[in-house]
Length: 221
Image (cartoon, rainbow, N blue to C red):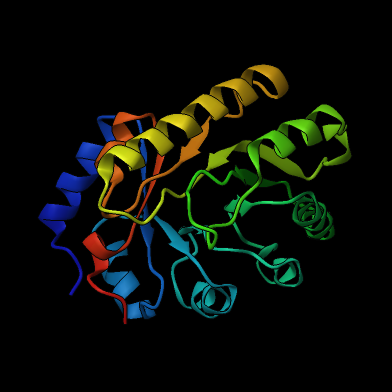
């Protein structure tokens, strides 16, 4: 069962007090469940899977801001390029090339976050930080006119050790600060980190976007 309107408002106020924004993660949820949360005032929703996102987007209000937050394959970019508002999981030059190409085909500029691997788990995706710095140092970003480099994303290790989670979030904030200073500008401003179990730590360490699903929608379908 979705969160109550009162609890959602309280959650959003808490997040906004850190100058951050809530991304409601609607993975596995049907359009009627998403619409229920939409009717409580939520407008930003995140989806992990392209197939689900493609099916849901036409069935829901046009003013929803859709974020792609899961691992994104290059051959799936074309399906979301016409409408996606932000891609959190740009984790390779090859994927950035494809997003830029598909954005051009749709006459759009698509905002992206550079996903950096901060977790200790092999299953987590993302740029190796040093390799990302090396790539940025040798790449002309003008070659990506249809991308807006908006910030970074990271996923902490799935662990009960909250000290480790905090250290990983602190590390992502340090990476963000350096990248913004050396390669980008104030338009590079987003730090997407934190989920239902650790969003409070993420906010304390500088998150500007928190991706929360279970607290809003309940367990996955």
